[in-house]
Image (cartoon, rainbow, N blue to C red):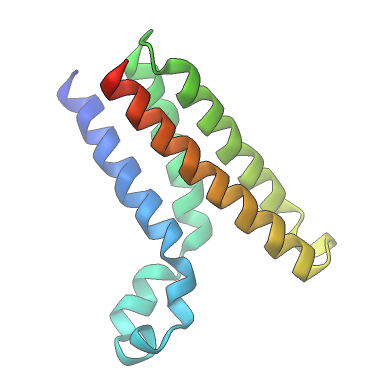
Length: 120
């Protein structure tokens, strides 16, 4: 594994955490700490950056056993971002429900990808 690929993995993980912590922006802890609220604000930017960085990670990783699980996770992220483009055209409740479902599915796929890359 190259240093650049390891760097992409760490950035991807950090961006994933920032994306998943976005609901905390409205919590009482974020209200007490404005810096936390400001850090979690650019949720959409973090998602797009995650898509780009994970694509670079996939290209740098090459042909490995976990390549297929990574592709499936990346496609789920792509669907999640494309779904976000239709936010204003959809019912807010339905959109939020779909967004959460795909976000949880993406996290599960990332766990599968990590496990398959370490143990297969």
